[in-house]
Length: 118
Image 1 (spheres, rainbow, N blue to C red):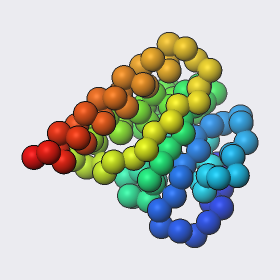
Image 2: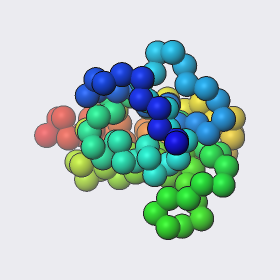
Image 3: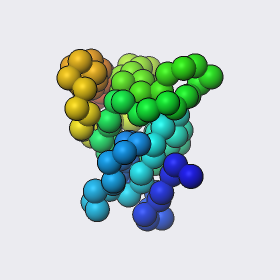
């Protein structure tokens, strides 16, 4: 099982990592990008912390499934208005992926800010 829910609250902090244990102040621990995206789509998540390198996991029937795909999903959702603002942290050790994910989150924040001004 790759989902561990620590609370029954509707609004939760999500920890995405296949190796590191979930910090005590998070509510949900998932190990795949697909599971993280499902919870974000459901609107339960108010804060995320993302790792990138998730081992040999798959989502969306493709040989990918990294934290950067979750960051991409958040960015696209912010642009389209389908994902409400989420506080995002990146805890990956992968330097290249971190830069990519940081840019995606910066873009998401830009889109959320822009929609709030409209």
